Length: 266
Ligand code: DGL
View: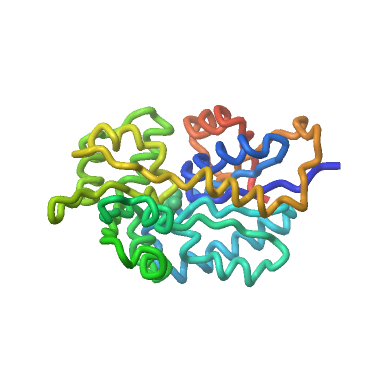
């Protein structure tokens, strides 16, 4: 019997930061990675249009894969569509990725926290509500970047990153106020952990870069608790589906490196 897979959705390579943590915790689980490259960058989409697009896509994916659960490994998508997905597909458990504002507020010493995200995530009411609920005692700066996700894509495919561009994009995260400095930057886009070493290198001072991938994987494990993976499933490889149907050979190589076999959209 083939076990029900877990779907991991992102607009591109960002969700791989979550997949790698999920595999550490659930080595026997089968994963189907969905790179919605036809919609990249989702950070530039209007919220309602993005939600409608993703609900439509999941109708197709759930029908074809009958997943045990789905991870929306993308902050921009999660903050727009999680509630709609749960309402449309009540039998499928969804795990979302939302800006790690609560842990940042708990950990900061200076009280100055920055949230680095796509322009879409920064605009969302969902993000503002998280700040109101968990970080009202902090000074939170929202920094929207439309360049970092494409820079992470290029870096992962071609191994090249423009460090000066990274420096310029992260610069607004660094705030000095009354002798205090920003001490935590929330990586609120799943693409960004791939660039974190360049961010450390180009940052004006050291900060804690918060990557929520492990916490998301733990949440998935909790959600799947009642549904253990069928053991001995390694004869069925994990797969990756690109919604455009046109993955460049550098992407195919990258996916192979992550143990994902390219598959066609159903
Ligand atoms: N990886 C996505 C996120 O976590 C954003 C990338 C995009 O704009 O498509 O927000």
